[in-house]
Image 1 (cartoon, rainbow, N blue to C red):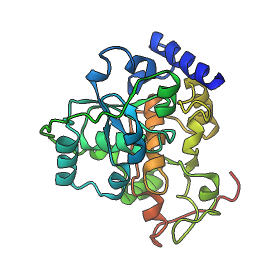
Image 2: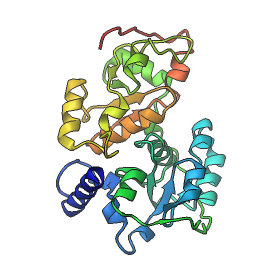
Image 3: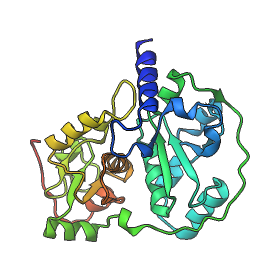
Image 4: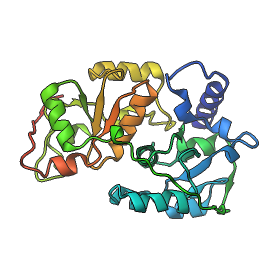
Amino acid sequence: MELHISCLVLALALSEDKSAGYPRTDMLVEPADLAKPGAAEKYRILDAREKSKYEAGHVGGAAWVDHDQWAKDDLGVERWRRRIGNTLGIGVDTKVVIYDDARFNRAARIWWLLRAAGVRDVRLLNGGWKCWQEAGGAVTKEVPEIEPVKFDMKFQPDRVATKEFVLEALKEKKVQVIDARSQDEYAGQDKRAKRGGAIPGARHLEWSDAIDAKTHRFKSAAELTKLFRKASIDPSKPCTTYCQSGGRAAVMAFTLELMGGKDVRNYYKSWAEWGNDENMPIEINSEK
């Protein structure tokens, strides 16, 4: 009951005062707002949970998006054009809201991929499935009929970092490289590639630190500001995030933009590429 009340109170408070909090409140949709009559019809809602969970019940009007398949595929233009336009009925001007039950770890990847493909307005449901249920949001098993639309894909290169871009950033020292993995991965103790460690000079802030563990909502603007300062991260300056395969880095990229960041890239191939390439420099950070 305590969690139910806290989530509902936060959602109602934020829905009533759009001027407070994050610099980019437009990147989030509050459950209380989405639950208002007619609100869901303004968006293409995407459920990024496992398919079995979607089939058991989901937000009204939500279509299922295959996160695991999206995570495996490269950014092939034709494939993504068909997938986004034909399968999901999303055009570049479609307003999209995404949710999951993994503290944005799945939803943020879909957010980033859609934004990188050129969809202009993509948001996350604050608190995800957990907050939707606790705020009394309606649940259905009905699968929406989706009308295919033409998706004029315009790949956004300024949202993507390559290893060449990161190497140059290390030389120029004008871009903050942010490691969104766990402390053990950053320190090289949890080895998930041929080599363990971190990109030299990377600032470490684990993706989950930005999320309230109880409510699954983003922490307040004040709390995020403290986290960034402690990690020596300035969202107003160019940033490139990375993790193991781009998903956790997408959560961090979203957080940076939520806090006003305007030059934020995701090194999407991340440590899976860097840690397996012996030509790439690494450093071992035994202590944070």
